[in-house]
Length: 294
Image (cartoon, rainbow, N blue to C red):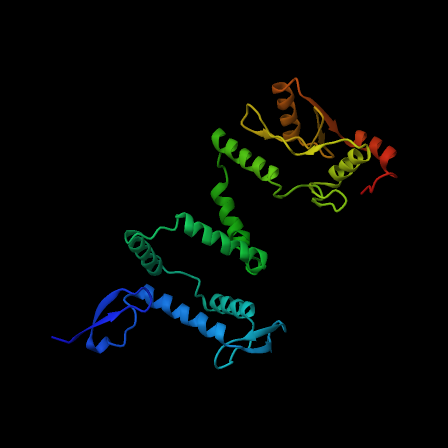
């Protein structure tokens, strides 16, 4: 019978037993070993002054904190190079055997109590994703859905699919929420934040109409209220001035026309005015030289 050695884990402090041959073992499990390794790595990096170098690929200056001072590229270029190499070697292509192995591993992790849907895990993932979006890392690679193969595959899947009224209603509510929160999405107009207005508008027509209201010293609200229609759709007027709502329409589609008609039928007591090409040109003739007209 081999001799047993009692040890104390350097990561979590738990007592554990190992054979004499493994007496040099410092942690009780693989997770503790990983945590200890990462801790020592951070301590080494924080205590190392490093050498300032110039990246071979992008030319930017970066700090090489490694003990051997062997880095030739910055972190971003190194990661991009690794991605290119994996794609060229076909590493990202997964076989049925590997998919089966991944499935078994996930089942085992769930059985051991691992749960990616906890609040702590979601907050950690959300923080990482925001950081990657802000520093531009998420835009270095093209998502599968944006490739020609991906678009063709998605088109085949959704072709002929009919959404239920409940699904359409949920999608409409989600779109309304994004608008009220100021989040942007595709629009025909030239959307953007105007410096003289200080808020985001979806077209130059809306920007000019807002400037007219400012010139008139009229208090207004932009996309401030959402109305739920009987069809399940939602409608958000562009401007609210007093008790009157304004909709800016340089281009009237059949869907928009149907939504406006439904709104007026369902809310007959609410005043809604449409600013179309004729009304817009009349405003330009009066205020074109008084405001910063686009």
